[in-house]
Image (cartoon, rainbow, N blue to C red; front, side, top):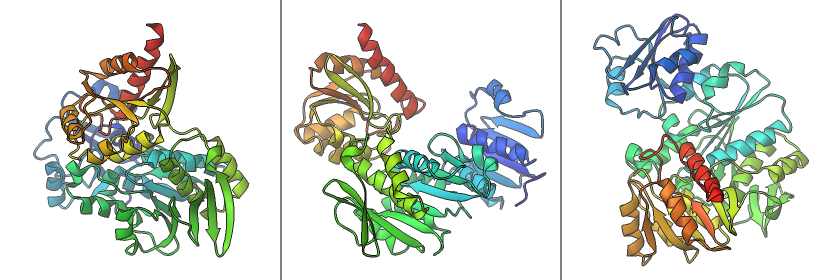
Length: 454
């Protein structure tokens, strides 16, 4: 669809919505921005958008006749495709695209798309670093922070775009087709929005929806939910495994990451050479290596990139050592499976700070993963009592309730002794108390650094 002169409604004025509106203006479309939050800071829009050129904005309520001349709606990923307003738009026969779809239709070059319940950001960042060792034009965008729409028009036929993709974004794709896709793992998450695991698994599979046998999908051989959909993926597949040797693909062999193909094997590196901790991160590295070898990157460049990679902010991020206690920020551990991985990565007695927004998941497996590693559980937020009740069910009673994150950090510091770790890994989203997991993580680090001045 040529969008020049088209009247396009953008629903949602968050980061992705603003990026979509900016891209649409560059395409000479007339933009109508709608945000349900009537308290949105409208003044800041003037700094982000050309509000004087073919632009209208509505906040709170959308006018009854406002859809009469709309040609297309772009939906921000934070808004469900089942939202009543979205359904009313669809009933009028107006096409609905996501911001991911809009960006893809206006980008060029090779596209690598990475999804999964956990590890997306780490794998996307790592893959971007590997690509930069070999290709001149590399873009890293998507759910990782910089919206795809921000970089779409900068791409060329020679560029490589590495895109982190969430299940929310996959709800509204139509033609989106990456050259290489990856599904890292699928465990329960966002069931408040997707309702059932089957729906959630199906959305993750949709990253491959438009791929064919010219394309490739990287899959986790060990993931039971991925096994349910693997035979329905209609593209070439490369597997990685942390549990068994594969004839073709990536696997762990006594600490070595090995690439096997057509009867030949090649050691990429040993996990002790990596700067990132935990079995889950070895899987993320294998996925990134699988993408890299498929893009023709030499093994020596892959080795250099993976052994220099220091991880991403808010994902088991080392913060400081104070009075012999190590502090780690895992604010991106927004679901139990991610938080389990953080717990397992700890190699010392740990005080764990958890709790937050309730996404409708259970915490049994998270509590069971403590296995003597967790000394004390400090809880805050909407799910605090729900988690405490689950912990008591499994005989874990060393629980402290905190009114906010600052109190949680202070209480943890008072309890910790030299040789301990304090880990923020909430197993929950941040939205009950913070704007984002980034804000939560930055505040955690601020409070930790503040302990030095006490």
